[in-house]
Image (cartoon, rainbow, N blue to C red):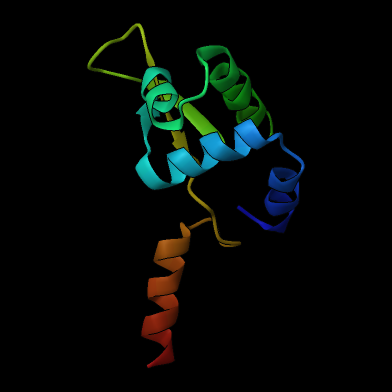
Length: 97
């Protein structure tokens, strides 16, 4: 997530920010699990997930334990060279030595 994502998160409603934080700390989760963790209504969580998906912060995957549900996770940040930030940090640490 780049600087523009930070600006977009600030513009979201409080419920979407809460869902973002729940996924950040406890994700990946199903919608039902997000409802339980956040104590928001199912409708509010659905709306928040839609908003987060619109700006490209959340990915929806198949939940293999129950195919009727989806699994939601935060997208991995990507460095300029296309690698994940963790990989990039490891490279920087190796290159700094």
